[in-house]
Amino acid sequence: MPEEIFHLFAKLFPDFIRITESCDLKAVEFFTLWYLKNRGDQGDDDQWVVMRWEVTELLKKEVNYEDNDVDQHLKRLERKGLVLRRRMTAAEGERKVRGEDEGAVVALLTLGTEKLEEVKSSVNQLFASKVTVVPSALRKPFATVALPLIIRIAKHLLQTDHQPTPK
Image (cartoon, rainbow, N blue to C red):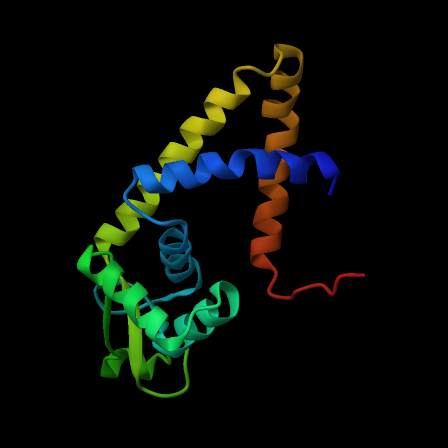
């Protein structure tokens, strides 16, 4: 990827943090909700469900949380009504909801999904405001050629299950 993309990401990152805060979320809370929505399986009541141990391992590895930190983090999300920690139901166990054994899961609640949509909407507004300052000679090819191509590439990568090894 061109170096400019990384510079742009670094420049926009504070805007992203501001957006999550304006939506009453910390960035780590957003990423937890996003993980549940995108890595979870449909559980009962159309909740996105991930095994509790998987969430714990993710936060320990990526955010350097200890067990108590994970517990406090999930408690905050529960108090906000965004997630629910519960036991896997028998039906979820039969469908083998992302795990081998019946146990504790973290479920993304409707309010959590709505919060994700609120952040996405704000990010889209930010994108739209940034694109308006791009000269029209660049905006048109971006909208008609580059953006559809980026979307096709993203869809393809999301459909493939393998992770290529970096060279």
